[in-house]
Length: 100
Image (cartoon, rainbow, N blue to C red):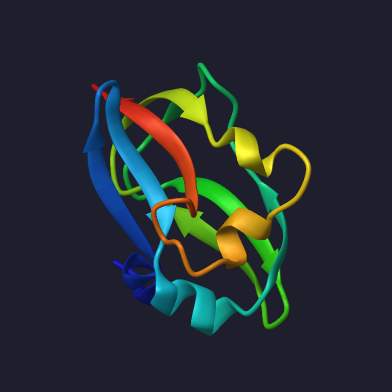
């Protein structure tokens, strides 16, 4: 697996696994200006591209740590990506995935 793995965290939530950005990921990427996220209902596969982020230092594709169906996308990311750049890592989540 790539070094990108340390850039995200996973946490069990009611409808599966929540995937978010770690502080280390924030530090490495810099301020995130844009994220291309999957949509609710999309199928994702472990190790395949889950999302792309465009940040100060790089444009990065982030592989999915799990396989399953996207059940939620962080609503805070609808207008801007401040939630990914703040100090509250719990708020810096991308999607929830119901694992296969």
